[in-house]
Length: 77
Image: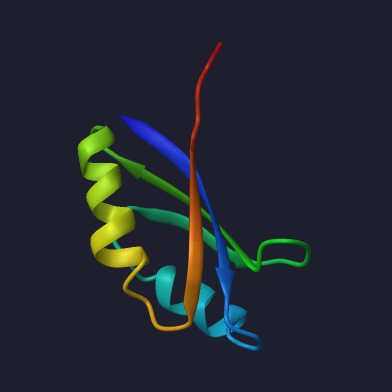
């Protein structure tokens, strides 16, 4: 299993709507609107890196109001 944090920038005033919509996507375990350089932080999981990529590109990035994402896979060192 692969887990990642996805940092999201949104259009002004869209963070709460984006977080709400993303929280309903399968594979998303947490979606919260935050302050700072990113507007929403998401924690997601998938069976492998390819599925994680599909989750981000096909489902998360298609949510209206998102301007940019940064995917940070979790590693255990």
